[in-house]
Image (cartoon, rainbow, N blue to C red; front, side, top):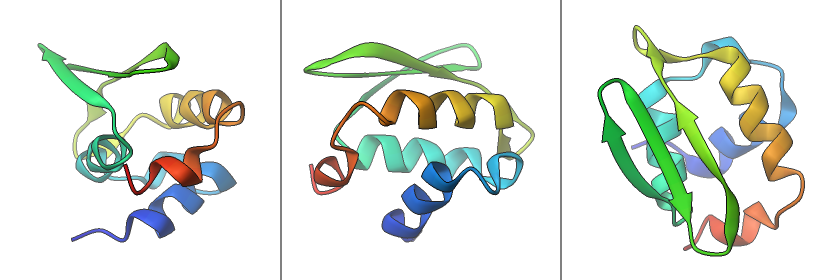
Length: 86
């Protein structure tokens, strides 16, 4: 089981965007209260009270680095640490 606090720190730090497992990132978003919808290879995450949609795709077993960066930029405007226990 991934340590979601540590993973959230990695996402927010920006130091390992290209080295984050896709399944762990999906698990983190679900743990934070996001609803996941899968359309082909696209995983779309939405959350009540969250105006953006997060749309990510895997590259092998990893998340795309630029999409991890986009998630980080979106999260800067929200109290994401409070969501971890959602």
